[in-house]
Length: 197
Image (tube, rainbow, N blue to C red):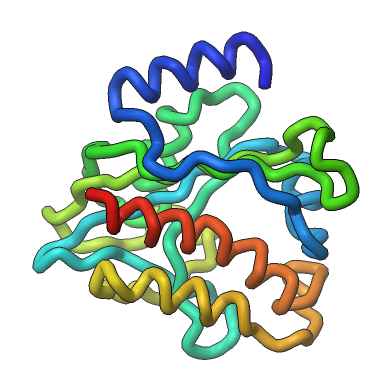
């Protein structure tokens, strides 16, 4: 983490609270993160609160049938985490959502070396997006549909992601199994953090 990123983290904590879950984990067998690391080293996870205490999830046009998850988006090198969060919320939902809480921060390192440098970090935030109807603004996101799920469903989504089949995805350029296990990590962290609120 650079000095600027450390300062940014301190500002996020000051504004939105210390992340309820903050841990470092190995990447496992997924190669998805290495592909992402070529153009980004950080991403945001958008935990958007909808009416009736439900959370917004989505699926993409190329996902296996029935697979929905929390929205995520990359932090570009010229952006702050907060700038990326607001941009991604708009591009993927069109909603005017306000940040309520810093939920989780998950940093990933290489599997073979626990002392290695952090390669990728996911920042999860709870947002109030109860007003308006979500709609895709950026067609390149390839979002197919949304689902609003109860809060306690996030843990089940993590379990579903962990159990995806070991079949190759030409879009992801790796196995759904490995991608799912990677994506499940932040869902488990979010589920855990929401139980603490």
